[in-house]
Length: 77
Image 1 (cartoon, rainbow, N blue to C red):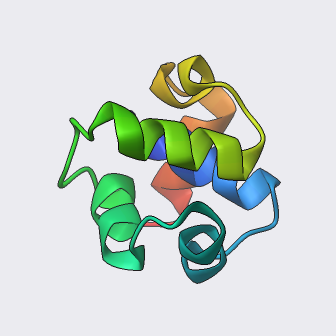
Image 2 (image 1 turned 45 degrees about the vertical axis):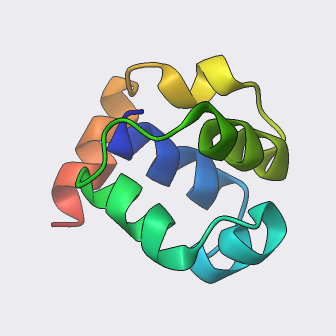
């Protein structure tokens, strides 16, 4: 899973990490680790839960980020 893609999709949905955690039943710590790139290989269960909670398909979360998402991520560091 690409960290920048997850951040971009979550922010586009207007959710905080905590709100996504509550909606997906995935811990906020796991979401934070995924968004930092500390865990690049989540289980299929985690990917599915996040995708459902975000209203996207799993392939969206697995896709490489758009150039716009990369720029946003770089400017937020």
